[in-house]
Amino acid sequence: MPMFGLADVNSFYASCEALFRPDLRGKPVIVLSNCDGCVIARSVGAKKLGIKMGAPWFQIKTQDFAERVHVFSSNYGLYHSLSTRVMTAIEEMTPRVEQYSIDEMFLDLTGIDGCEDFEHFGRRLRAHVLATTGLTVGVGMGPTKTLAKSAQWASKEWKQFRGVLAITPGNPKRTETLLANQPVEEVWGVGRRIGKRLNVMGISNALQLARAHPALIRKDFNVVLERTVRELNGESCIPIEELPPAKQQIC
Image 1 (cartoon, rainbow, N blue to C red):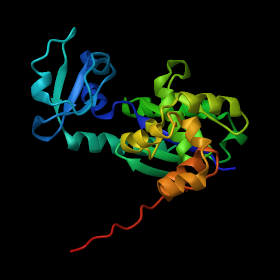
Image 2 (image 1 turned 60 degrees about the horizontal axis):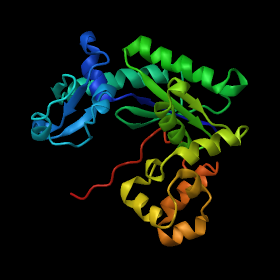
Image 3 (image 1 turned 135 degrees about the vertical axis):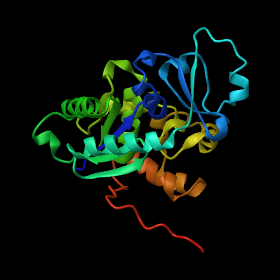
Image 4 (image 1 turned 120 degrees about the vertical axis):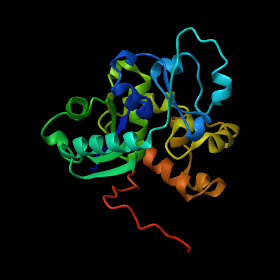
């Protein structure tokens, strides 16, 4: 059976800025968009202060917070450089990978459990990236990409997992518990707009979505959401793409 992983750098842009400023470790840090328009990244400390993603800078700078907020303009050259280092570190331990975004990478972990426990491998990967780049990643693992995404979400939400969580077919109770506590809008590929429509149908968490009839979901939404339902039930529908498909352009 296939097994996928997802490695994601915690608060990537904010972590990049704090990497070269040890005095900012654990402090509220935010990064602003082009021309300092709005917030595009927040450290854990900034989230605790209630700063929202996308909040306009002109509003935030007039507010009084309980702690000083450290503000940075975007530095995409720095983020790209550190992203490359993180991805290289991950590839050193997991050769078959797919870079999903600047701070996320899907991993093919099929068969690794023949040598060591999945979560033990995840902690070794996390330690290797930290030692190599100074950045911390969260690692989620599951029999489908969607479940790996959900596991990675849970590894951030619940501190007892210490940034690494594996959900496997051999432990269905853990999978059900995770999905029952994951809001449906947090499921990979759902989002707020579709989440609101699902809420109207009485589907408010990932477990309820997993138990929905795939044909009904396809009829009311689309084949993409039907695929999400199948993936939540452990049916792998989205393979690793080592080479991204060629972009289509109209010139």
